Length: 214
Image (tube, rainbow, N blue to C red; front, top):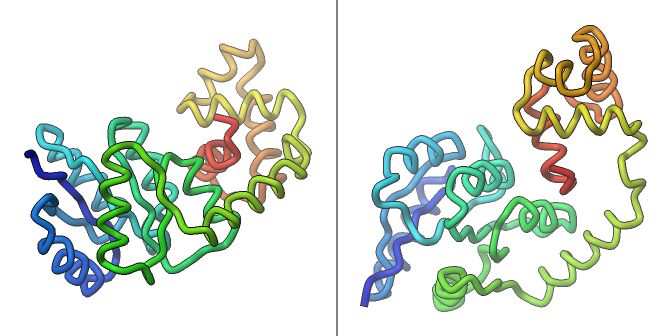
C-alpha cells in the first residue's frame, strides 16, 4: 500500500518537530517535507511539483502569510491538494474563511495524535473531519455572512472591478474589458480600498476570495 504523503506548514519549529514525531509512528504516513510559513510553503511545493504531497497540515496564524491565504494560493495552483487546517483558534469567521479558501478539514491542536491521523486519512479520501465545536462555529459563521449586505456597500461597477482584480487583471486590462478609462478604473480601485479598509490590490483580491465572490 502506498503511504499517504504529508507536508507540514507551521511557523513554530517545535510544533513541526512534534508533529513529525507523532506522524512517523504511523506506518501509513510519510512526512514528505515542512515549511516555516506561507511563502516558504509556496516555494517548497513549487520545487516539489514532481512529487507533491497528498495532504498538507496548515497552521492558521503565521506572520508572513496566514493559513487562509496560503491555502487559497495552494489550491489555485494545485487543486488536487487536500489541506487540513490545524490551529489553536476557533473564531467563527476563521473557520468559514478556511473552508471557503479550500481546506477540507479544520481541527484544533488540542486533538490527540490518533485523531490527527484520522483527520489526515479523512482528508486523503476527501472526507471533511471537524469536531462538533468547529461544526457549530462554521454554521454560526455562515449565518453571520448570510445576514451581511451582499456586497458590503459596493456598487455593481465596483464589484465588477473587484472581481477583475481578483482575477489578476491590470488597470489597463480592466479598462479595456469594461470599456472605461484607466483614470476611472483608478478611481474605482481607490474607492474599493477605502470601503473595504484595505491597503493594496493583493488584499483586495484576497478579500474577494474570502467573501466567496471570486
